[in-house]
Amino acid sequence: MICAPSFLSSNFSKLKQEILSINEAKWLHFDVMDGLFVSNTTYDHQMLKTIGEFSNQVFDCHLMIEKPEKYVDNYIENGADYITFHYEASHNPLKLIQYIQSKGVKAGISIKPNTRVEVLDDLLEYLDLILIMSVEPGKGGQKFIPNALDKINYLNNIRTQKKYEYLIEVDGGIQFDTAKMVKNVGCDVIVVGSFIFNQSNRNQIIKELENV
Ligand SMILES: O=C(CO)[C@@H](O)[C@H](O)COP(=O)(O)O
Image (tube, rainbow, N blue to C red; front, side):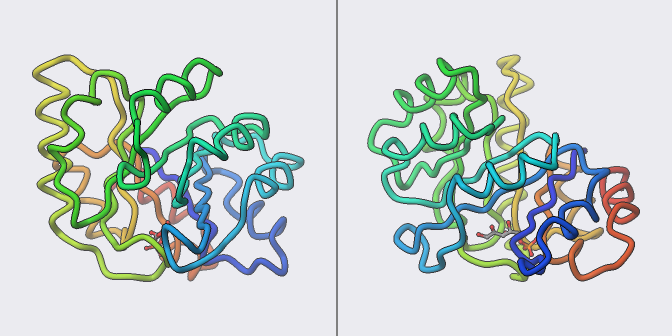
């Protein structure tokens, strides 16, 4: 699996040092929150510009925002490699998926724990990535919600049957035990925040998570 560290739980007063402490991660997960779609507010596209000055990792941007179509250009123009928006925040997800892809950026969609995975059925053939939230979006350090496993398994089965090529990503409450569980049902990318940033040997933890 690929481990995409989320720096949501990092020490923002020494951000460059914190990001460099996970420099062996191939991906970096950005948790963009607007205080509207979720009650918390984090940062916007400026963070990609800042971190892009010293990181060449894959920028995996999770937009937990209302009206993603209004702001997506900011992320396209500032180095996003993947842009994932929420099904619950989009009025025309296919149009936004195809717009993102027309700009040479990979398009993902995310669903919250209470959203049924079947709502994505008609979009799957177009998607580069599906992000299954295994916690309620809005903050790090929460407990893994097991219904994510059935959703990952469902998406993995359809991918195999229909030979789709999307990546399956999961976000929230991932540690060694839950990483094993999601890998066993077909997950490709794990977003890990507090479990990594609560440790000192971060690059070692990342390697071990990728090889559970
Ligand atoms: O973004 C969110 C929730 O919105 C978090 O899930 C972080 O992305 C990862 O947090 P941990 O659960 O790994 O601390």
